[in-house]
Length: 235
Length: 235
Image 1: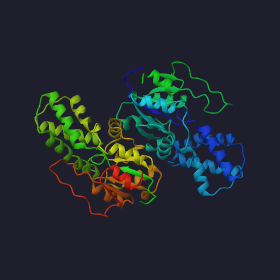
Image 2 (image 1 turned 90 degrees about the horizontal axis):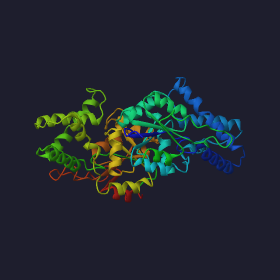
Image 3 (image 1 turned 90 degrees about the vertical axis):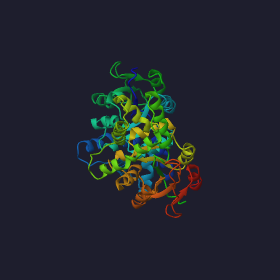
Image 4 (image 1 turned 180 degrees about the horizontal axis):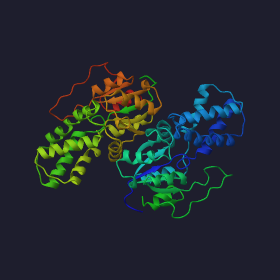
């Protein structure tokens, strides 16, 4: 790989952590504690399905800047109501913080630890700073720093996020490689001048949704996991 | 100590790292490489002496937002010129990055590692994000996240910095303890509603300047170093 990459900026939900199995486990635990049974996998998928539309409302200016914690909570309140589940505010807050406690993919910590020896490694997520910070503590993610859309008051794929990341790191956009499991994120990063590293996470949406690998050559690097990424970047 | 403190926000220059001996060593190395001899201790003190006045110009609105790297560089150019030292731009940039390579006080990494098990630990420095990130890699500082005045476009002791830190961490101001070796920083933090932890660093300004301990009771905690701070906060 080119030696001019100085920093790797990681998408987090789906790329570093397995949000789906983590949230399902949290919901199952919640159900046990509150004595309710539902299809928690479907609940988790519905919860996540509210994520992009809510951010898009912020991106279009229909909502003022709102952090992900609050977008997640708004969706959760709707879903609990629709499911006929009554919980007090503290219980809702506690469940909403499931997103602060997501578990990493099995290769994530080992791969990041290797990559950190050679590159600055940062988050570049739509998750808010406190969510990402709590998650790093929970999951043992060895970030050099925690950058978030929240710092720029723009959500990915807005260009401001990618350019703002390079600016805060004190490097040129082409010295940053965006690493993500989502082609749309990488295409926007590329349009802003960043390098791109795709990591294939076929299990992100569970066993019933098949994800395809992108075409060879669309991104600068195509990796099967973070250890493969470290191999390819000779970290 | 009160159990409601959830995060510790650390001043960095002088509190976590020994800027003076680090910068003197960098200047000595610079002198050797460029074949010039000067009083590098005095040069380091003069360099640092430009720091507060330059930030104050930003704080008063006489300068637009300017990151510390650029304030440091402006002062360095003046001092090199006054000392009759000619260096090319790359050499100036390299020397200016001495502030990215400061060494920690001997107790800093051990103390932070203990405190991290119990609290969220973050920088809250006037240094810019890339400076703090590089320094953490250089010195092995185990921050949970890297917060900087740069994110708020206000320098300490502006209130926006302390309140902005609590906001990004998703906690109330009184749930954050500012930790610093400088009473002025702590007084401003306290005025913004934060808790205060003073760490005594009598060697910050070298052997010829005597620093006094603040009065008992002025701050919530008065510690001799980060290990003592960890003891007092039962981390």
